[in-house]
Amino acid sequence: MRLLAHRVRNVLVGVLCAALAACATTGVRTSTASSTGSLLQIRAAATSAYLRGDAATARLLYKALSERAPDDVQVWRRLGNLYVLSGKNARALNAYAHAIKFGGADAQVWYNVGVIRVRQAERALIHAQQSAPPDSALHKSLAAATQRLHAIFPGDTASTKAITAGSNNRSSSNHTDHGE
Image (cartoon, rainbow, N blue to C red):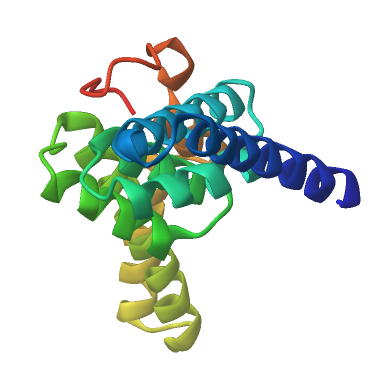
């Protein structure tokens, strides 16, 4: 864990140093250009971390991007995917809602939202079944409903892979890609 924290800190320090160096060498007249340059550097670092599977670093960098470029659909999609991988479904749903809000309401985003909602429904039915009297009709009905939902996505691994499927095949420069 310390190694990961150290690596994340080094990446962030490197990106920030590069951004500050750009500002210092170009002066005030190019503050917009340097800001754009630092955004591009953060995006490149985030994309690199995402594609190589470094979820913790990618999540930190995409979170920073979401604050600096709040209308970027790809940032929100990837942030949603990263939250799913870390089990933070409420945050994932929030990120996907932002993607939808800014024009990323494609089939993959809606699918990802659906997977999360099905998982939530399955957990709710399991809790309801555990609360129902074991010999009751309600208990049997809840058991059947839980089995039907479980059949849709048999395991968390399968649905998590489905959510992030294809993300490694996307171009990092294409900000309107639809599979993330």
